[in-house]
Image 1 (cartoon, helix red, strand yellow):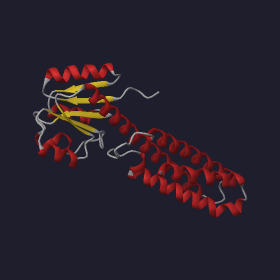
Image 2 (cartoon, one colour):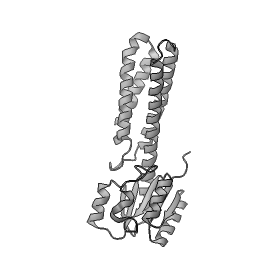
Image 3 (cartoon, helix red, strand yellow):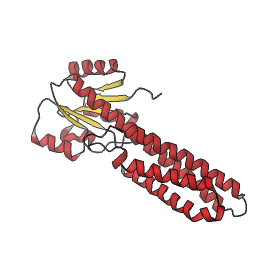
Image 4 (cartoon, one colour):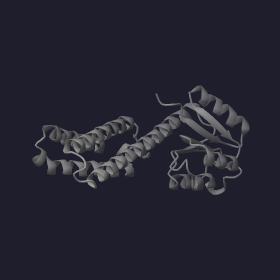
Length: 240
């Protein structure tokens, strides 16, 4: 099971900050609190989070500096902005920084929860994509090592390694498609179908399909042909 999502909430209104954090904890989230932009920036530099909920008008957040350049380990962190003083200027800044949501205080708590759920789902998809890309990179390294040692590995070993890695990658692709299903109603979040990293991942699969097409005549393997069709289906499904 996934561990509880960890949220950082930053707001200089202490009563609102603590009461909202407690309500989110009752929803099953782990919530850390920061009373201003400086404290939030320090925590973002030290701890990985799944979501940032931040007030716009608070000390240490001039010009939305808190989300201007999020540090590792929180690069690409989904952000929900809140304000009791909505303006066209802050709304435009929020849109330009591709924040997840721009909420006006006082807000209905359930409205916040819906956006929190979207943000957490987006973050988990980002992490799943990153993990799957690392897996493909490991696969490429293994294939390069085998290719650099001709005659050192029998054909069965090469095919076994290739089939094993492809099977793992197919499961990654299925997991990503399942995570993304039904979570992109308005197209605003970078989920499975419009994530640039997954596009790279899909291109790698397409190259693998081409390689299998080229080698099927040499190996005369029905298993390889079946695998090629499964890969084609996975790529097609994730693109729809």
